[in-house]
Image 1 (spheres, rainbow, N blue to C red):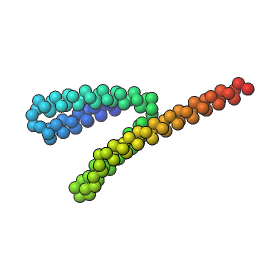
Image 2: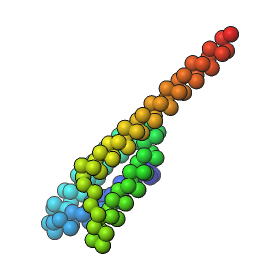
Image 3: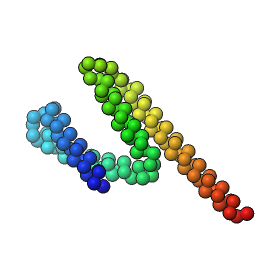
Image 4: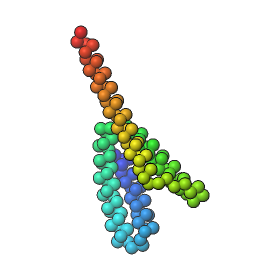
Length: 123
């Protein structure tokens, strides 16, 4: 839970800085920061619950963060390679689908192993 709190603080600071880049109006910055904190809390809780059910999401999330870092690096003016949003979205969707397939395949194998293990003890 400490990790979630630290992540919330970091993203809150990030959202305030992003708001300042868009508007110098302190009311807009304050409202944007509050909405950002509330949204992050809600999403973080949902993601943590989902990761308890599907633990394979954690390595996928790290892989997607690395992919986002590469995408941002490629978009710097000196390199100027832009990955279209549609293609990047398909990559993210593909990663989620592959992760779910891996999860349910492991779950099916585990269920089959438990069932086969119980059959061996009956005889």
